[in-house]
Length: 128
Image (cartoon, rainbow, N blue to C red; front, side):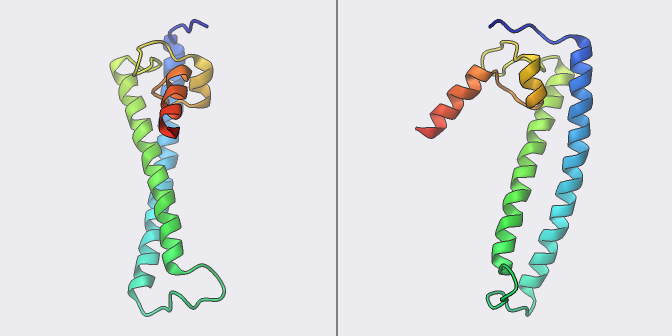
């Protein structure tokens, strides 16, 4: 199926969505950073990390929060790259092949850099 380039209205729509997503992710990263600071302070303090029968250890909580923080930071980086592509006029085109990505895929994944074929190829390469 041949994909057509986005219209100017489409690009404005996705730009608005990406900027909204960016604000939400920055807020979540700030919240997670605060939680990480709290766990760090508790770990550095005198709390007994390994003997709390009521919940996860501080080490487990640190690991969980760090992983989530990393995922959000990665999402933010993808959004920032997409916004940069909007600015230079290449948003909506696969960064690997240069083909139009398609509105449906961008609706599902507004920060995607790849057309569906390239995304599948990259995923298959990762599984090898």
